[in-house]
Length: 143
Image (cartoon, rainbow, N blue to C red; front, top):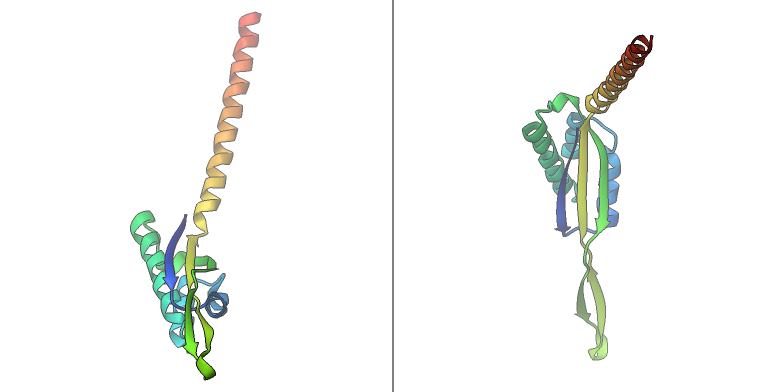
């Protein structure tokens, strides 16, 4: 089952946060935690918090186990930019853009998709068997 968590208006630019997100994409949740704990980037803290939140959501809402979870995707989008100015020489000012980002982490346990596919296949087989039985019953009634 796919489970996600989102943090909005994080005070780090999307470009810098995207570098951290690339480190954990496609990894197991345990491995992603270790990578974030040992990385020295500033954006690892908010990404780690969102990852922990997504893991907690999966455990509490879908009874998933930490060992089975993988980081399916990490989406980083730009947030609003705060416009500030810095004084410069001769009474002028230069613009400062304080960028922010939105972080979404999606974790999943791979079993659910496979289980759903097998359940769907079983339903199709059962329906086909019922249809065959109905055809045979009609043939017998016609005779």
